[in-house]
Length: 334
Image 1 (tube, helix red, strand yellow):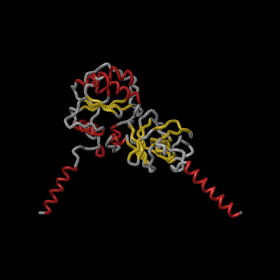
Image 2 (cartoon, helix red, strand yellow; image 1 turned 180 degrees about the horizontal axis):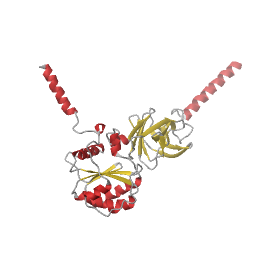
Image 3 (cartoon, rainbow, N blue to C red; image 1 turned 180 degrees about the vertical axis):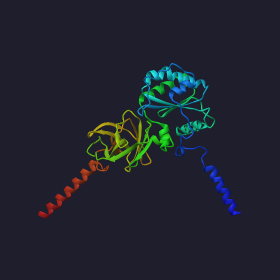
Image 4 (tube, helix red, strand yellow; image 1 turned 30 degrees about the vertical axis):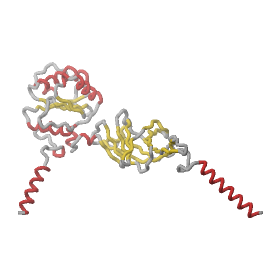
Protein backbone atom coordinates (compact mmCIF):
# COMPACT_ATOMS: atom_id res chain seq x y z
CA UNK A 1 0.00 0.00 0.00
CA UNK A 2 2.85 2.36 0.88
CA UNK A 3 4.38 1.70 -2.55
CA UNK A 4 1.21 2.83 -4.34
CA UNK A 5 0.90 5.86 -2.07
CA UNK A 6 4.44 6.97 -2.95
CA UNK A 7 3.78 6.48 -6.66
CA UNK A 8 0.57 8.49 -6.38
CA UNK A 9 2.40 11.35 -4.63
CA UNK A 10 5.14 11.33 -7.27
CA UNK A 11 2.47 11.55 -9.95
CA UNK A 12 0.89 14.55 -8.24
CA UNK A 13 4.26 16.27 -7.91
CA UNK A 14 5.02 15.72 -11.59
CA UNK A 15 1.68 17.25 -12.57
CA UNK A 16 2.35 20.44 -10.63
CA UNK A 17 6.07 20.72 -11.36
CA UNK A 18 6.02 20.15 -15.12
CA UNK A 19 5.39 23.56 -16.73
CA UNK A 20 2.40 24.06 -18.98
CA UNK A 21 4.42 26.28 -21.32
CA UNK A 22 7.63 25.67 -23.18
CA UNK A 23 10.13 28.16 -21.78
CA UNK A 24 13.18 29.74 -23.35
CA UNK A 25 15.60 26.97 -22.38
CA UNK A 26 13.54 24.69 -24.68
CA UNK A 27 13.16 27.42 -27.27
CA UNK A 28 13.22 26.47 -30.93
CA UNK A 29 12.13 28.08 -34.19
CA UNK A 30 11.47 24.67 -35.76
CA UNK A 31 8.01 24.69 -37.34
CA UNK A 32 7.69 28.48 -37.43
CA UNK A 33 7.36 30.33 -40.71
CA UNK A 34 8.26 33.99 -41.07
CA UNK A 35 7.51 36.66 -43.66
CA UNK A 36 9.61 39.49 -44.97
CA UNK A 37 8.24 43.01 -44.90
CA UNK A 38 7.20 42.81 -48.55
CA UNK A 39 5.50 39.43 -48.04
CA UNK A 40 3.44 40.87 -45.17
CA UNK A 41 2.41 43.84 -47.37
CA UNK A 42 1.47 41.55 -50.24
CA UNK A 43 -0.57 39.23 -47.98
CA UNK A 44 -2.82 42.17 -47.01
CA UNK A 45 -3.01 43.63 -50.51
CA UNK A 46 -0.93 46.71 -49.65
CA UNK A 47 0.81 48.06 -52.73
CA UNK A 48 3.07 50.92 -53.85
CA UNK A 49 5.37 50.61 -50.82
CA UNK A 50 8.90 51.97 -51.11
CA UNK A 51 11.78 49.86 -49.76
CA UNK A 52 14.56 51.92 -51.35
CA UNK A 53 16.00 53.02 -47.97
CA UNK A 54 15.24 49.73 -46.17
CA UNK A 55 17.84 47.06 -45.45
CA UNK A 56 18.20 44.22 -42.96
CA UNK A 57 21.56 44.32 -41.20
CA UNK A 58 22.63 43.50 -37.64
CA UNK A 59 22.90 47.16 -36.63
CA UNK A 60 19.17 47.81 -37.21
CA UNK A 61 16.45 47.92 -34.55
CA UNK A 62 14.62 44.55 -34.62
CA UNK A 63 10.84 44.73 -35.11
CA UNK A 64 8.91 41.47 -34.71
CA UNK A 65 5.30 41.46 -35.90
CA UNK A 66 2.74 38.79 -34.96
CA UNK A 67 -0.35 39.23 -37.13
CA UNK A 68 -3.43 37.45 -38.47
CA UNK A 69 -4.70 37.48 -42.02
CA UNK A 70 -7.86 39.60 -42.24
CA UNK A 71 -7.22 41.36 -38.90
CA UNK A 72 -8.14 45.01 -39.48
CA UNK A 73 -5.80 46.28 -36.74
CA UNK A 74 -2.96 44.28 -38.31
CA UNK A 75 -3.64 45.78 -41.73
CA UNK A 76 -3.86 49.28 -40.24
CA UNK A 77 -0.46 48.76 -38.61
CA UNK A 78 1.02 47.70 -41.96
CA UNK A 79 -0.44 50.88 -43.51
CA UNK A 80 1.23 52.91 -40.73
CA UNK A 81 4.43 51.00 -41.45
CA UNK A 82 4.20 51.87 -45.13
CA UNK A 83 3.14 55.52 -44.76
CA UNK A 84 5.14 56.62 -41.69
CA UNK A 85 7.80 54.22 -40.45
CA UNK A 86 9.39 53.35 -43.79
CA UNK A 87 9.72 56.94 -45.08
CA UNK A 88 11.05 58.25 -41.74
CA UNK A 89 13.03 55.33 -40.33
CA UNK A 90 13.42 52.75 -43.09
CA UNK A 91 17.20 52.82 -42.68
CA UNK A 92 16.99 52.22 -38.92
CA UNK A 93 14.92 49.04 -38.44
CA UNK A 94 14.44 45.53 -39.79
CA UNK A 95 11.11 43.67 -39.63
CA UNK A 96 10.18 40.00 -39.50
CA UNK A 97 6.51 38.95 -39.49
CA UNK A 98 4.84 35.78 -38.17
CA UNK A 99 1.32 35.01 -39.39
CA UNK A 100 -0.68 33.27 -36.64
CA UNK A 101 -3.90 31.92 -38.13
CA UNK A 102 -2.24 29.30 -40.33
CA UNK A 103 0.63 28.12 -38.10
CA UNK A 104 0.33 26.89 -34.49
CA UNK A 105 4.12 27.03 -34.07
CA UNK A 106 3.99 30.77 -34.76
CA UNK A 107 1.37 31.14 -32.02
CA UNK A 108 3.55 29.11 -29.63
CA UNK A 109 6.40 31.49 -30.45
CA UNK A 110 4.17 34.46 -29.60
CA UNK A 111 3.25 32.80 -26.30
CA UNK A 112 6.92 32.30 -25.40
CA UNK A 113 7.78 35.88 -26.34
CA UNK A 114 4.91 37.16 -24.17
CA UNK A 115 6.17 35.05 -21.25
CA UNK A 116 9.64 36.53 -21.74
CA UNK A 117 8.17 40.03 -21.37
CA UNK A 118 5.93 39.01 -18.44
CA UNK A 119 2.73 39.88 -20.31
CA UNK A 120 1.45 36.43 -21.27
CA UNK A 121 -2.34 36.03 -21.64
CA UNK A 122 -4.08 32.70 -21.02
CA UNK A 123 -7.12 33.93 -22.93
CA UNK A 124 -5.23 34.85 -26.12
CA UNK A 125 -3.56 37.92 -27.56
CA UNK A 126 -4.71 41.09 -29.25
CA UNK A 127 -3.19 41.42 -32.69
CA UNK A 128 -1.06 42.82 -33.99
CA UNK A 129 1.38 41.93 -31.21
CA UNK A 130 4.51 43.95 -31.88
CA UNK A 131 7.99 43.77 -30.36
CA UNK A 132 10.25 46.77 -31.03
CA UNK A 133 13.63 46.21 -29.43
CA UNK A 134 12.82 45.57 -25.76
CA UNK A 135 9.23 46.91 -25.82
CA UNK A 136 5.91 45.32 -26.73
CA UNK A 137 2.70 46.78 -28.15
CA UNK A 138 -0.61 45.21 -29.16
CA UNK A 139 -4.06 45.96 -30.45
CA UNK A 140 -5.17 49.14 -32.21
CA UNK A 141 -1.68 50.63 -32.56
CA UNK A 142 -2.68 52.66 -35.62
CA UNK A 143 -5.23 54.65 -33.56
CA UNK A 144 -3.08 55.08 -30.44
CA UNK A 145 -0.92 58.22 -30.53
CA UNK A 146 1.02 57.27 -27.38
CA UNK A 147 1.96 53.82 -28.70
CA UNK A 148 3.02 55.20 -32.08
CA UNK A 149 5.18 57.86 -30.38
CA UNK A 150 6.86 55.22 -28.20
CA UNK A 151 7.48 52.96 -31.19
CA UNK A 152 9.17 55.78 -33.07
CA UNK A 153 11.21 56.80 -30.02
CA UNK A 154 12.41 53.22 -29.58
CA UNK A 155 13.43 53.02 -33.24
CA UNK A 156 15.33 56.29 -32.88
CA UNK A 157 17.11 54.96 -29.75
CA UNK A 158 19.02 52.53 -31.96
CA UNK A 159 18.55 49.54 -29.62
CA UNK A 160 19.69 46.22 -31.07
CA UNK A 161 17.95 44.11 -28.44
CA UNK A 162 16.53 41.04 -30.22
CA UNK A 163 14.17 38.91 -28.13
CA UNK A 164 14.45 35.95 -30.54
CA UNK A 165 18.24 35.99 -30.19
CA UNK A 166 17.97 36.28 -26.40
CA UNK A 167 15.62 33.31 -26.20
CA UNK A 168 17.79 31.28 -28.57
CA UNK A 169 20.69 31.92 -26.16
CA UNK A 170 18.62 30.48 -23.30
CA UNK A 171 17.47 33.72 -21.67
CA UNK A 172 14.05 33.14 -20.10
CA UNK A 173 12.98 36.54 -18.83
CA UNK A 174 13.57 40.18 -19.68
CA UNK A 175 14.48 40.93 -16.05
CA UNK A 176 17.69 38.96 -16.60
CA UNK A 177 18.73 41.85 -18.83
CA UNK A 178 17.94 44.46 -16.17
CA UNK A 179 19.49 43.09 -12.95
CA UNK A 180 23.24 42.53 -12.65
CA UNK A 181 25.47 41.64 -9.69
CA UNK A 182 29.20 41.79 -9.09
CA UNK A 183 31.35 42.09 -5.94
CA UNK A 184 28.12 41.87 -3.82
CA UNK A 185 26.80 45.01 -5.51
CA UNK A 186 23.54 44.88 -7.46
CA UNK A 187 22.57 47.16 -10.34
CA UNK A 188 18.97 47.33 -11.52
CA UNK A 189 18.47 49.17 -14.80
CA UNK A 190 15.39 50.56 -16.49
CA UNK A 191 17.36 50.21 -19.69
CA UNK A 192 17.38 46.67 -21.10
CA UNK A 193 20.75 45.21 -22.02
CA UNK A 194 21.62 42.28 -24.24
CA UNK A 195 22.93 39.04 -22.74
CA UNK A 196 26.55 39.84 -23.63
CA UNK A 197 26.57 42.74 -21.14
CA UNK A 198 28.21 42.20 -17.74
CA UNK A 199 28.58 44.37 -14.64
CA UNK A 200 32.10 44.94 -13.32
CA UNK A 201 32.71 46.40 -9.84
CA UNK A 202 36.29 47.12 -8.66
CA UNK A 203 37.38 48.37 -5.23
CA UNK A 204 39.20 51.72 -5.46
CA UNK A 205 40.96 53.82 -2.83
CA UNK A 206 39.47 57.32 -2.68
CA UNK A 207 39.99 58.03 1.02
CA UNK A 208 41.89 61.22 0.12
CA UNK A 209 38.68 62.61 -1.38
CA UNK A 210 37.03 64.26 1.60
CA UNK A 211 33.38 65.18 2.09
CA UNK A 212 32.49 67.88 4.65
CA UNK A 213 31.94 66.44 8.16
CA UNK A 214 31.51 62.90 6.76
CA UNK A 215 33.74 59.92 7.31
CA UNK A 216 34.99 57.95 4.33
CA UNK A 217 33.78 54.33 4.23
CA UNK A 218 34.63 52.77 0.86
CA UNK A 219 34.69 53.42 -2.89
CA UNK A 220 34.01 51.43 -6.06
CA UNK A 221 34.46 51.80 -9.79
CA UNK A 222 31.15 50.57 -11.24
CA UNK A 223 30.97 49.95 -14.99
CA UNK A 224 29.24 47.88 -17.65
CA UNK A 225 31.03 45.81 -20.27
CA UNK A 226 29.76 44.41 -23.54
CA UNK A 227 31.75 41.53 -24.95
CA UNK A 228 34.77 42.53 -22.87
CA UNK A 229 34.65 46.19 -23.93
CA UNK A 230 33.73 48.92 -21.44
CA UNK A 231 30.52 50.72 -22.43
CA UNK A 232 30.00 54.41 -21.66
CA UNK A 233 26.54 54.72 -20.11
CA UNK A 234 24.92 58.12 -19.67
CA UNK A 235 21.35 59.40 -19.33
CA UNK A 236 20.07 56.06 -18.07
CA UNK A 237 18.38 55.14 -14.80
CA UNK A 238 20.37 52.78 -12.60
CA UNK A 239 19.50 51.74 -9.05
CA UNK A 240 22.63 50.63 -7.20
CA UNK A 241 22.53 48.58 -3.99
CA UNK A 242 25.73 48.35 -1.93
CA UNK A 243 26.40 46.46 1.34
CA UNK A 244 27.70 48.67 4.16
CA UNK A 245 29.06 47.20 7.41
CA UNK A 246 29.56 50.51 9.23
CA UNK A 247 26.40 51.87 10.87
CA UNK A 248 25.83 55.63 10.70
CA UNK A 249 22.79 57.87 11.09
CA UNK A 250 23.36 59.50 7.70
CA UNK A 251 25.02 58.26 4.53
CA UNK A 252 26.06 60.01 1.36
CA UNK A 253 27.35 58.70 -1.93
CA UNK A 254 29.61 60.87 -4.07
CA UNK A 255 30.26 60.59 -7.79
CA UNK A 256 34.01 61.03 -8.21
CA UNK A 257 35.78 62.11 -11.38
CA UNK A 258 39.53 62.69 -11.56
CA UNK A 259 39.74 62.82 -7.78
CA UNK A 260 36.99 65.45 -7.44
CA UNK A 261 33.44 65.16 -6.12
CA UNK A 262 31.13 65.99 -9.02
CA UNK A 263 27.76 65.09 -7.47
CA UNK A 264 26.37 63.70 -4.22
CA UNK A 265 23.42 61.41 -3.55
CA UNK A 266 21.41 60.70 -0.40
CA UNK A 267 20.96 56.93 -0.35
CA UNK A 268 18.38 54.91 1.55
CA UNK A 269 19.79 52.59 4.24
CA UNK A 270 18.00 49.33 4.99
CA UNK A 271 19.12 46.00 6.43
CA UNK A 272 22.83 46.61 5.95
CA UNK A 273 22.55 48.05 2.42
CA UNK A 274 22.43 51.52 0.94
CA UNK A 275 20.50 52.13 -2.27
CA UNK A 276 20.66 55.12 -4.59
CA UNK A 277 19.70 55.94 -8.17
CA UNK A 278 21.97 57.54 -10.74
CA UNK A 279 21.92 58.17 -14.49
CA UNK A 280 25.50 57.08 -15.19
CA UNK A 281 28.17 54.65 -14.03
CA UNK A 282 31.55 55.71 -12.70
CA UNK A 283 33.56 55.85 -9.46
CA UNK A 284 31.42 56.24 -6.34
CA UNK A 285 32.56 56.80 -2.75
CA UNK A 286 30.44 56.11 0.34
CA UNK A 287 30.50 58.36 3.41
CA UNK A 288 28.71 58.35 6.78
CA UNK A 289 28.17 60.46 9.89
CA UNK A 290 26.12 60.44 13.10
CA UNK A 291 23.75 62.84 14.83
CA UNK A 292 24.94 63.79 18.34
CA UNK A 293 22.95 65.72 21.00
CA UNK A 294 25.19 68.11 22.92
CA UNK A 295 24.81 68.93 26.62
CA UNK A 296 22.91 72.07 25.67
CA UNK A 297 20.34 70.00 23.77
CA UNK A 298 21.50 71.11 20.33
CA UNK A 299 21.77 68.44 17.67
CA UNK A 300 25.06 68.38 15.80
CA UNK A 301 26.29 66.18 12.97
CA UNK A 302 29.66 64.59 13.69
CA UNK A 303 30.87 67.42 15.96
CA UNK A 304 34.60 67.94 16.02
CA UNK A 305 35.15 65.70 19.06
CA UNK A 306 37.01 62.58 19.98
CA UNK A 307 34.29 59.92 19.87
CA UNK A 308 31.74 62.31 21.33
CA UNK A 309 33.85 63.44 24.31
CA UNK A 310 33.35 67.15 24.91
CA UNK A 311 36.42 69.31 24.26
CA UNK A 312 35.99 71.17 27.55
CA UNK A 313 36.11 67.91 29.50
CA UNK A 314 39.25 66.84 27.67
CA UNK A 315 40.90 70.20 28.34
CA UNK A 316 39.92 69.98 32.04
CA UNK A 317 41.38 66.47 32.36
CA UNK A 318 44.58 67.40 30.54
CA UNK A 319 44.93 70.58 32.59
CA UNK A 320 44.43 68.68 35.86
CA UNK A 321 47.05 66.14 34.85
CA UNK A 322 49.51 68.89 33.98
CA UNK A 323 48.83 70.63 37.32
CA UNK A 324 49.26 67.37 39.22
CA UNK A 325 52.46 66.62 37.35
CA UNK A 326 53.83 70.08 38.07
CA UNK A 327 53.01 69.70 41.77
CA UNK A 328 54.80 66.35 41.97
CA UNK A 329 57.88 67.71 40.23
CA UNK A 330 57.90 70.82 42.49
CA UNK A 331 57.79 68.69 45.66
CA UNK A 332 60.48 66.34 44.31
CA UNK A 333 63.03 69.05 43.68
CA UNK A 334 62.25 71.28 46.67
